[in-house]
Image (cartoon, rainbow, N blue to C red; front, side):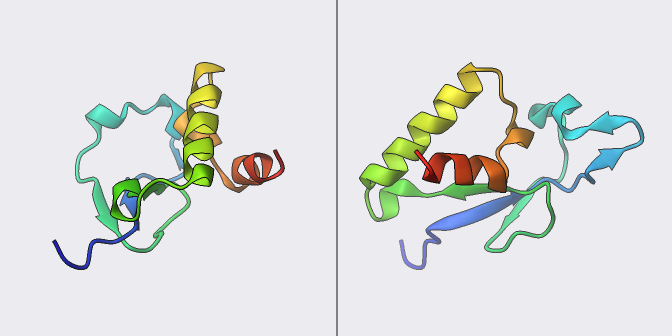
Length: 91
C-alpha cells in the first residue's frame, strides 16, 4: 500500500465539556461519527502512531510500555496530554 501515514489523529467530535460530562465519562464504544485526519482538529483528538510502517523503534516501544503502565495505574485517555508526553521524555 502506498502513502500510508505514519501518524493520524482520531477525531472524536466531542467538546472538552458537554454540559456536566467530561471526556473521561464517555465510553469510546458509544461514540458516533468518529473520524480521522492527518492533523489534530481539537484538544480531544487522540494521536495514533502506525509502528509497523517503519518498524518499532526502541523509543516507541518504551512509550507503548509507558502508556500501558499509566493505564494500569488508572489513567484514562484524557490524561495523555502534553504533560504526559513531557513526563515520558524526562525518563
